[in-house]
Length: 138
Length: 310
Image (tube, rainbow over all chains, first blue to last red; front, top):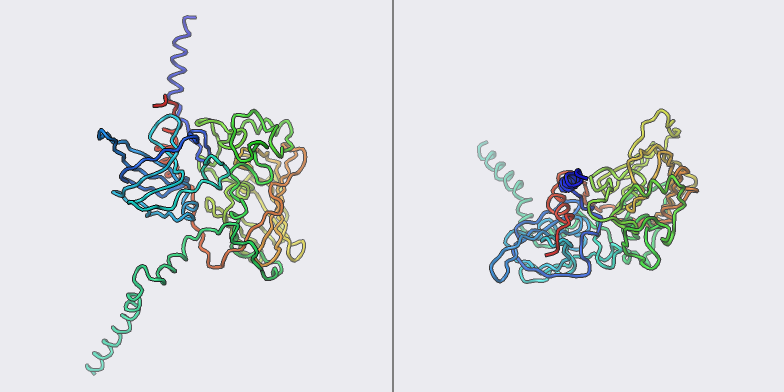
């Protein structure tokens, strides 16, 4: 009996150091039931596999800045939708519609409309992935 | 003499400047410039682009060309096209966490060994989708897809080239390629030949428009599809390429793995590939380990950590 607590502590410590991987073809980390829309200033646009991602800073009413990372589909997929490696540049003003990860971190997936510097940008289409709730194309 | 040299120098300078002068007339944004930009990194047209399109007859014993596999659903995100790992009442939805595939629309004929192997594979999609941190899909780590998964997941654009002894298949996803030997050689003795990611392939024309490929010797590190369907080292695959007409190629892929499946089954059945223009430039699609590591560091891992909802 007296060993139970140390063993439990060890188990917690071990599980803390096991780094999980989000399958980039998986959907379970995201809340598909709720879309959110966030505006901010672009800090970086990465054109990469398995997915591209956009970093931007959003400021709330009290001036606090949140650093968002929003993933898009792979370059060949978003290319077909009119996106490119130079679609976004630091300083651009964006408004992004996305779904957010369930754990509440500032990580999302593009899901629909995008506004870039006040003008509509080609929406991010997840539709043909086969998931009506917005499962991403790989 | 010196006048002649000066004249020649002026003439030469003018001739050398001509292309630049001509180019200056095509400043960025002109039609010509746009046309040039569009000649690189092309994307495959959707299915609707091919509706009602007429075609010339098929050439004899010729598969050469660039082919669009994406239009008819070659990406196959939920498992092979003929057997997606989906429930009848959720025809497109990842339900996940189901113990097996017993209730999917088109169940596969697993042997007990095959079923055990299936359960060891933890996909991120389909009826057996598992949560973050539990997926063990080798492709998520940039492992090669291997054959036949390269035709059963992310099958987008395929270029086919032929020479006297080979048919070469160049796949867009992960910039992978295979060699099909057509020189009459036999498949290797698998007691001697090392297992390969893509196996060993030989092909032959069974008629003027049908090319049949047999492949053996795949290693056991790969999945068959994105839903985690397993295969053993005994797997053999037969591909049947049928050139319907100049613009249409049909592909049937038959899986034969008696250790894991009770009978052979068709993962693709007369799957249609549409011919793309000869000047179609295939966009590269590498899996770069450094990019994947960045993705996991910035997005995958933080998204997977279970912390209380804010």
